[in-house]
Length: 222
Image (tube, rainbow, N blue to C red; front, side):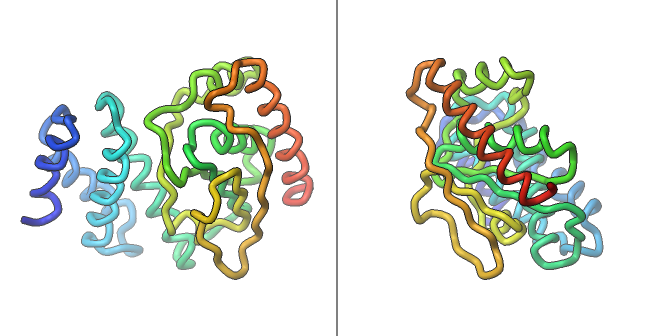
């Protein structure tokens, strides 16, 4: 049984049979991304990344409504990071990776703030060492209060490729889960986990993250 042949069985074991013809969809996605990364990666490499990305997101999925879209975004992001890490795609602006445990609160807030405040002068990614199924509703609400939309975001597992592509890796309570590479700049921000906090406390964490982001951007782009 090859990887694609095992997709249906895996979906059924997770109780998520609802991606219609997942084997056909994943093959189509691999073909699409192979064309996009033509000359950079082989079709076999792209197919492997698509399958790995699907399985990684399936582990934490509790509903299937957005799984197809998320797999597409996650696989493309990982392939882009791999291309950047290997030098086949340029990094025109600094790359910052935010990592926390669940990727449902702190790292997501930091990423969207950095993207907004840098106005394109910094590119961001975020990930979790043990990702949740969905973002914290209180975190989404607290960010909406300051005009930042997390509606399209979702928790993503930490992968080696996004770490290798980063210039700066910011950790927030993920312990030793993040691999260490020479030449990377590492920061650890001490922040409360907002997952179980009331909204007022989530706002406090949000504002603390804003102060950290301002300091980071001052060193990266002035």
